[in-house]
Image (cartoon, rainbow, N blue to C red; front, side, top):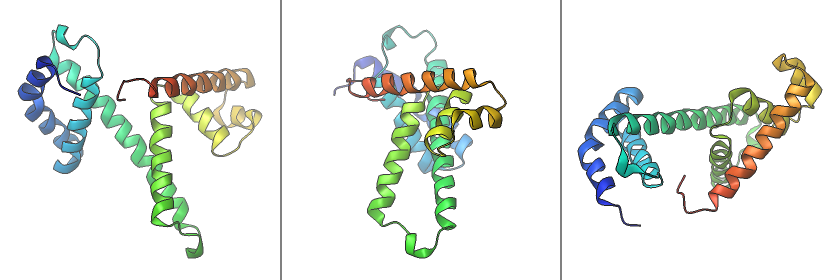
Length: 171
């Protein structure tokens, strides 16, 4: 895929600034470099980038989304590693199994990206912890009808996100 002159100009004009900002947020130049590249990859999938009045504000918004996704994936992976550490050594996954789980976590994170926090929480409690809707309602402190609405929203969101994943958009 070739970059338009606009994307090239944005990259040349703002890459160093964005990398420095992410480096301050993360404290790691290597992760900052990766997330800077991820931000520009998202930029490639954006529409109407030629009409940006405030390119730094737009890049900052994209970078913040990339950063939040990174932190969320890291938290999910850390939770999985902690749960794994509680298991006997005979249950330790192979490198291939670990890679498959990591890929599944990243896919789930992409599917849930943009979903309201409570709907994401309800969905994960139901699908990962196998909690029935009534227990979720009690744990979250909402009505059963709210849990059912949140589940419907989450399932629809995941379905639409999976359809988008089949498009040419690189997100």
